[in-house]
Amino acid sequence: MSSDEAEIGSASSPVHTWTAETELTIAEAANLHQRWLTGLLELEGVPVGAQLCLDMSQVQSCDSAGIQLLISLRHSVLAAGLQLVLSSPSAMLSSALRSYGLDAALSSLPADS
Image (cartoon, rainbow, N blue to C red; front, side, top):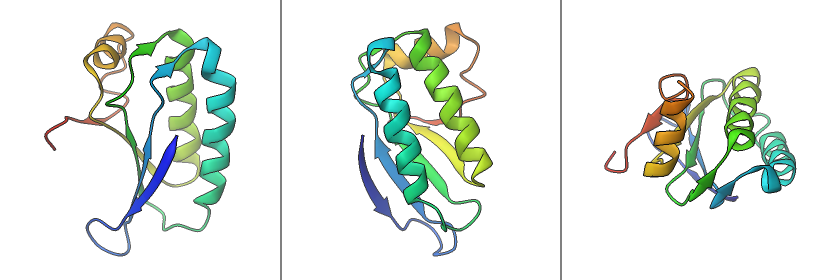
């Protein structure tokens, strides 16, 4: 995960952008989970309602552990008072989210947004 911070919109609702790895699989899940939780700790103190935008454009592989990881991240982000937005999900990830019925629950922005 790489992390960038952008002030988009008002100063009271910053957008923090992370870039997801190419693989969201069981082989990477434990490592990614720890890195994402550490990243959330670094966002402590940001205004309630700020967005965490996760750039998903490079995801090439995702299994059920990867989907569970995204759900866990969403719960942690919401518990921190933030919003999670999946940005530019790859075609493969979009298909996986649809097959699990999660395309609406995990909000996303298309590549051209």
